[in-house]
Length: 256
Ligand SMILES: Nc1ncnc2c1ncn2[C@@H]1O[C@H](COP(=O)(O)OP(=O)(O)OP(=O)(O)O)[C@@H](O)[C@H]1O
Ligand SMILES: [Mg+2]
Image (tube, rainbow, N blue to C red; front, side, top):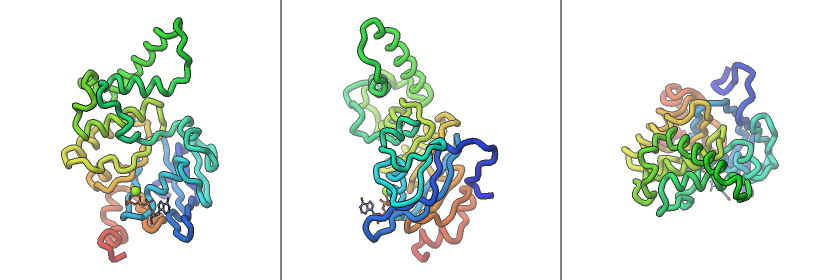
């Protein structure tokens, strides 16, 4: 049984079946197949140009697949646009520009939640709906251990804290799976440790698919790791197995 095989008949949160993408003659992603179950923490690693970001773009619907399938909660979403996939329960981190630097942490979270709700502004409903949004914001801040900085303006947060806050905003839509493309990129080693601790505090039922070059983050966070090499999954296994893999050492040393 592979590390990705579900044991209890649950529906996978995300399933890729023989997924491929070519750009002209370049096969950026080749025949990728795996499943992610609720609460799984999976990392995709691989050298520069291995196809990691392209794989994310196929999963989120930024690029159409050349062949193969993407299933979200058992539904074939291969031909779906990004926003419809997001609505099913998938989130990808926001870019830093989506934060409002002169507003407080709490206001940023309130806006992210409010922006997702399509309810029209109706005066008699305003107070009660505001209450819901406010409760939800506090719940998100608490879960992320950000409550103490709720009233801090975002521009006074460290770079690492701002990267964490982007993820908190991504959680406003109550995703069941979170896709993170290099969450520790550009962070100092201390900030990377904080990012890892932050991610480990998130709801254990939330599935996380992570691309990351920082191996400390990967080994601390991931339950399973898949190694992508020239668009193909070279090996999948638990962190210990990947750490000790001859094949993986060869590609990172450039002799593979
Ligand atoms: N839109 C595109 N058009 C043409 N080629 C592309 C496009 N996007 C990616 N590629 C190519 O596909 C291959 C995989 O790129 P990708 O960005 O997915 O790699 P990566 O594993 O994310 O690399 P990195 O670790 O550097 O972020 C590369 O050869 C890249 O040049
Ligand atoms: Mg990339």
